[in-house]
Length: 75
Image (tube, rainbow, N blue to C red; front, side, top):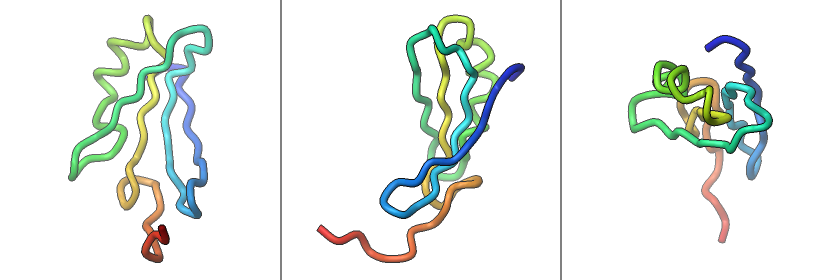
């Protein structure tokens, strides 16, 4: 993925890692991986879609570079 970016956000105290294709003027498209993968499993798909969308690929909690939950969520 040429011109891609990556970074982290924090949600409820958990670090979530993401990858972006960088198409700022394009509609975002979020790609979520399955149980055993990480966000980069979508690289070939993102390459095919990045001319039409700003593709966002995330590493789910406990996957890739995202953090793990350290406590049960309080409701």
